[in-house]
Length: 336
Image 1 (spheres, rainbow, N blue to C red):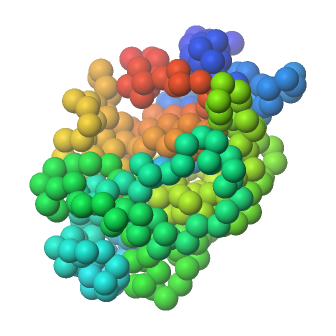
Image 2: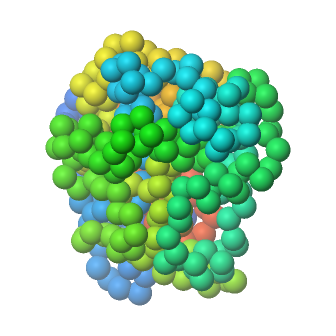
């Protein structure tokens, strides 16, 4: 095994030693791709995790949603300064003062509806239930805004559920149709999908687990309509690297919209700046763009240099709260 391979395998093995059931990676640099895995696909089984397996990408979905919205901006269908009220009349109190730019940049001030989700036992109990997007919006707007639109930054899944609804209102098509026609088919992402009410993951996949009252419950089968355009997509590490390479190279967005996406403001850490559906992380000697994702049973990191010559996507199936810090993980993987 090469020095690069030994380094990457060592990082994966350390994640399993820290408590992950399994972890997979697709890494690429000037020496080409490297794919690997560590741990098992199912607790209690010796079967290894498959590095080509599918997983729930959670909030990495937001970059897909932002890409579709910005394509519509480039086509003149949407405007970044359009108020939410224009597209979703009466849905959001104060929607005439919240713009699509505010939603995309997490500066709307809207309460994050996932903060009001049930506890772990409730998640397991309701795991098969369908969620209508309006339910999430009603939950969020039952709270006062956190701040005036544009005043500061606060991550909110509510923003991206609203963007999914705006995409549907502007196009007359479903969110899934627009993502498929505008991204999945043109880029050839054959292993990426919005499962809707389908609770099973495509084979192969690792099992996901959720701690409930001190015991691990298998949460692999789960209705992710709860997350929808904020976090409902399923993909593979190879597909996510292909998506971000297409995005960052300008294949999916015109120059003006890609610049808008990559226009950032300070977020929740010194090394993290938030753009429109994408984050910029400043690491030692490397700046990367991408997104993290966390949903019951699965954690995802997908980050890439601006020219997409260095890429990494990781999926981890946690069994405890010891998931790595994003900057530490990326520094180790990129060998910085």
